[in-house]
Figure 1 (cartoon, one colour):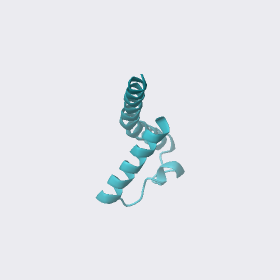
Figure 2 (cartoon, helix red, strand yellow; figure 1 turned 90 degrees about the horizontal axis):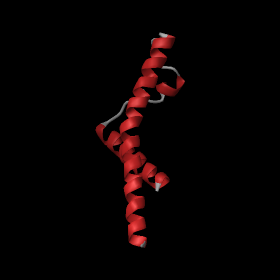
Figure 3 (cartoon, one colour; figure 1 turned 60 degrees about the horizontal axis):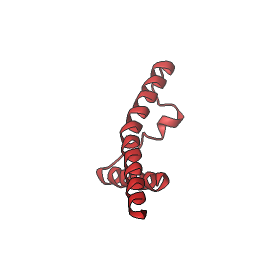
Figure 4 (cartoon, helix red, strand yellow; figure 1 turned 90 degrees about the vertical axis):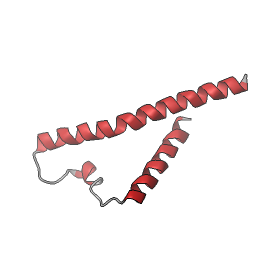
Length: 76
């Protein structure tokens, strides 16, 4: 019985993590687009200016892995 519960919990957790991993970039993109359309400014407002740093391939992969693991732990 514990194995079935653990399997169901793992499956539910991976479902939530996958949906979150798919939805978050789209939500950030649409929110940023909406803010740019409303403000019509040349520079990004505060929450989106945090994303305007120079990103290398390795830093992007390490950050993605870190956030994916943290999300998995929080959901689990």
